[in-house]
Image (cartoon, rainbow, N blue to C red; front, side, top):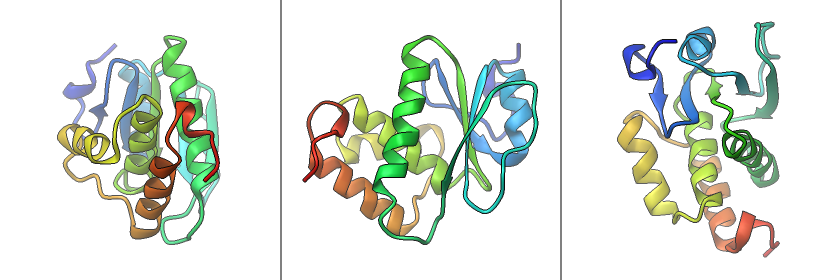
Length: 150
């Protein structure tokens, strides 16, 4: 297994969550990912030798709060069970960082702290405006699992 920081373009958010772009999906597997989460709404996941779950998020579309929350909740469940998971979208910048931030929100981080943490490991992280608005609404829900509707 290759250390994630040894593969250019892959960022380790923590011991269980790797972030990257679609072109690095197999590299994340080489870095120890046993499961992948594909966030691309414009295509279907490739066939790879590990399970891939698909959460079709689009960068410029509003009101994707629930889909973002579903993806982040799945990433959290995998990580909590000790499974290393690779999270990716096409470029690894907007949707990937959005779900990574939501994952940290689920763990109790504030939006500001979660954004800082993701940008620390992945400086190019920049959720698109509509995805950022979804994150703001998710943070406003508060509470365990951000499950309480506003």
